[in-house]
Length: 487
Image (tube, rainbow, N blue to C red):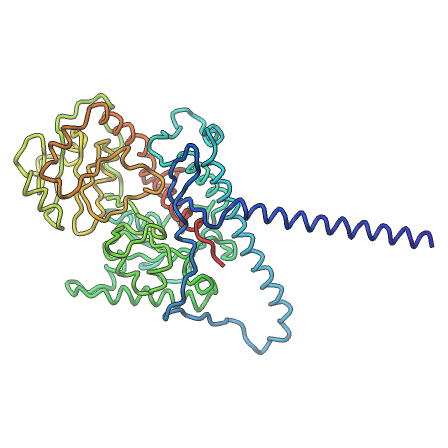
């Protein structure tokens, strides 16, 4: 009897210990999700000294069902339903646990970023920089602490699944030179690089990449001078139908954790091939025009980088030292198209030696030499809002003067563009010289320092490097995903 009583006592202790362990596990999970408030957003890294306040998380919303929601078709056969029921049930449980782990990971990341925002110094965030010269300049960021912590969390956790469906050249390839080079370079890096971020297990993925090229759609599907975008939209519609019938992931979130990338002007139009993609998915676009449906809460502005011959001009790789003379006040040369450039050329073309404004630069003069010899580079929109001149100006350390309307500048949720550029309303173009002459030399010096600080974020390397433009694009996608609580 004593042995039996002793055994019962041991069992009761084991039960009590198990119950206590379970309770602690539940409490720990509650703490994680309490710290990571579901209404918290890190999309805008606004700095805060005494009280923490960030924009409302507009991304965290329930996505309504729409008519073109395509139901997934099961690949399994009903003939073996009974014999495979146990195996399928186990697989479903494992997949559900992976989803829970994935969302818990994002909750922990949100909590970590929030704590970084509340911190009073950046020493912990900058400890990973080996050289002092590599340290970021705080003035060009909305909140340096938040950005560095977010970037670290991305490197630690973020996983992307790239769909294998689709045939070359329209899928899995893209242009790697000329004006839309960023489109092909990103697709190539996702396909063959980014080993830290890419996963072959879709159940581990936080986002899903649809690697089609809008530029190659235009080349191979569009009939010249037809002005008919229907073949592009049909291709996108067909692609969504394929992945949504073959896999469960699109239908699980109605496309909210999927993204496309397009630098061609018609990328936004092509995305209308699926209303779910247009309204729910993350669209990474050069043509980031809010008057044409671009939504900065969920979409990403893609910098337009022209690589003539496939490489950055050697002249832009080594700009003159900060104290070098720049004899021209401003410079622009470009074709007469869109609503803004005619105003600029009509007002300033050939009218003032300080304002070097050309429609077409004479053949005996070099475009990049003018940039390197000018204090300000005028960057007016053309038919579409984006312009490769902005990134070229950053490379040349020639302060960009943004002349655009409804344009969401790249990485503006992280970078303070006013720290390295000047934005002028198009209605003030007639006052351009007056506005630029009124900028004190000390301010111009600080703007140039800002350009040197952000330059690395716009560099397009042959093989992606930390903090370069390809990583910054990925970080922008990470921000949109981390701000969205999905099933």
